[in-house]
Amino acid sequence: MKRILIEEITKYIGEKVKICGWVDSRRDHGKIIFIDLRDVSGLAQIVFAPNQRAEIYKVAQKLRTEWVIEVTGRVDRRPKGMENPKITTGKVEIGAENLTIFSEAKTLPFETSDERKEVSEEIRLKYRYLDLRRKKMKENLTWRYKVIDFMRNFLKNRGFIEIETPILTKSTPEGARDFIVPSRLQPGKFYALPQSPQQYKQLLMVAGFEKYFQIARCFRDEDPRADRQAEFTQLDIEMAFVEQDDILSLTEELYSELVKELFPQKTITQKPFPRISFEEAMERYKTDKPDLRRDKSNPDELAFGFVVNFPMFEWRKEEGRWDAVHHPFTRPNFENLGGQARPLSENIKEMKKNPDKILAFQYDFILNGFEIGGGSLRTYKPEILEAVFEVMGHKKEDIQKKFGHLLKAFEYGAPPHGGIAPGIDRFMAILMQEPNIREVIAFPKTGDNRDLMMEAPSEVDEKQLKELRIGITKN
Image (cartoon, helix red, strand yellow):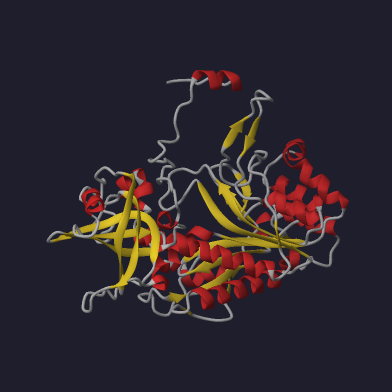
């Protein structure tokens, strides 16, 4: 007999079915044993009576919570007055005719069925596979899947192509520290995990794909920070032959339709999404990610917005140099200098002379006081990109060494292009009204980047280090 999901048993009243799952709870009423069995779809009440199947009843007496079992039996309506309206299968029960115990379970370190009991996050992360049995966590990850699925279909229906880009790539200065990976076959050389697919998606525009997206994993080796993760997920979008308005309008359409379709109980504060300049945001709200909700005590209000016209560069006092506010691939906006009609060489000269006066075609996507994404129009002219790196203090030989592949690609016909990369984790935390992003990630790390469940990072044995020609210096 084929196993069915518990949510389907109401279709089989009077028939025999086979279901599998975890023992959620056990109740003994006299000699009758009641088991609530749980699978991914829901709960079902199983009845074991001694006068029906004595040998099965004897095995059932051993059952404890979280044991994994298989039950075969007939689906019957519950006696009148014994229905449970709180669950979808509450009008039926299964009279057990056969029972198989797949595996037993030790006493759990914390209750998974009682959402009200407080459990320390350290214990939850150490036993994450148990924490994920909780109803709330299953709902969070299920909704995460639905949101990502909606995004994929939305973009697919508008001519976008999902393309995966490499995880092992080249270490380049883009902002945060890279995670580096040693190469065994090229001793002394290293890969880096991508902080974002930034250069690859620009190369895809040079390749002529025009509309790209992916659900991308990104990696940043940052110092411990609350509510950040060393690896995170973003919706990565890039388009050719577009202006800033095209990208912001597409983003607004995507998120408006997503909320309407999946979260109709939530209201969007203002449409079209307001667009606020960086200067206005700092003067009026004292932050570049203002909370634009009308009623900040209403968790079902979603105040989307865009912050635009960021400065291109900022002065790093501790390093004594200029740095890109967003990243070096952002296109400078020469219009505020009145220089759009001037020769490119003059605009570049002015940028090098007065970096503080240059704005950028950069924009942040905000929601309820959080930045949930960012993007820009990209530099596609090699001479501008090279000049940006020079403003940031890079020498010409270093620029060629680290970014020569991109500069060379731009010499073979690069279209104007731009994109945006909204974060999935932060957006989901806001939608699910969770206090931090760890509640919407299946296997998150702590604030200092430790995986308590896998006990990572960990030491590796001496043989592996020798193969990689790496030595460890101990204090």
